[in-house]
Image 1 (cartoon, rainbow, N blue to C red):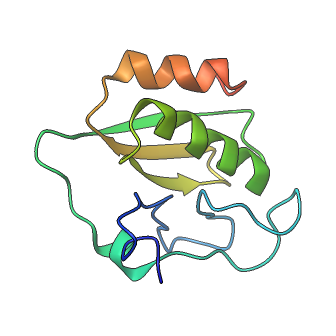
Image 2 (cartoon, helix red, strand yellow):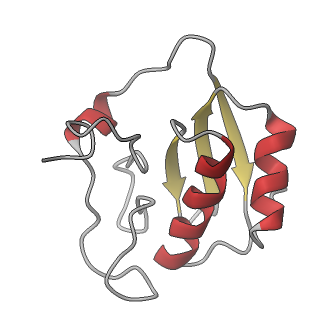
Length: 115
């Protein structure tokens, strides 16, 4: 059963722009090597009514473990938030109903202050 079938929020969206793009799903090792898993429903999910697309640069995000921590921090504010991560660009796009300040605060508290 996929996370979507179980009614769980998607962990992240994967934008196919290069090998350094990772999902929020933890990889087998600290550096995110291995193949990222993304459910097809997460890739096709559109903006939820009332949600906004936020974008942050997170200079300290360097590996798959970082992506997982960033995802957990965002989803602590909005469990239904969907993330698209560009690890090489150190950027994250977040579809969320939470306000920008709340998301930025959660990221900073998790040790990943956005710029």
